[in-house]
Amino acid sequence: MSTLKVDTILKRTGTGTITVGQSGDTISIPSGATLSVAGSSVTAVDNTPSFESYLSSDQTLSNNTATKVTFNLEAFDTNGTFDTSNNRFTPAVSGKYYIYGRLIFNDSNVGSSDTHAVQIYKNGSRYADIFTKAESDDPIITYNQIIDLDSDDYVEIYSYISNSDGGRQIHGSDGTDNRFTIFGAYKLIGA
Image (cartoon, rainbow, N blue to C red; front, side, top):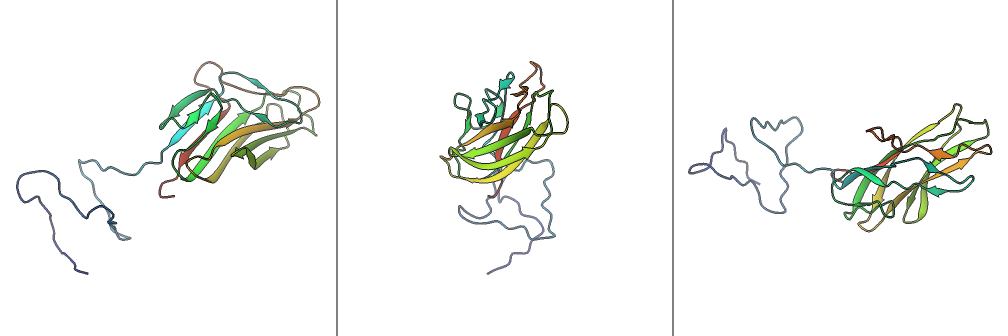
């Protein structure tokens, strides 16, 4: 291994591109060193594909049954990987994904025995459950999960409610920018 010690690297003639390394090389910046970019831009790896979807209106849930949440609108979708026709996220790029969201239940009659849950499904099978025993009306569940996904895997969100006295809905949008029930994901950088 050779070491090159210089203070400044300039293009031999005029201005243009200076190439460091070649395809397949790793350029390493050691711990404690700083990469200073003054007045220039740096192209970095981004965490895409990514998306966030939401409900346009309230959705009724069946009691004691897992009900697929029908996210029918998108706030954004960088790679067209969320399908509003079947309410699925299919990443198209393998990696680790941060799955997140929120469900707000329209339940003004919460009882002590009521259960509200979010269920994350991967490829049609239940992958994770997030439960709450609500102590007040209109309970909210936020969820997040890191999941390894192949390019053709898919993720869906289901909701489960056990409530004997009605009030089995989740809130959609109020027609403005208030998106009550959401589902999103993004690829983790380097994973």
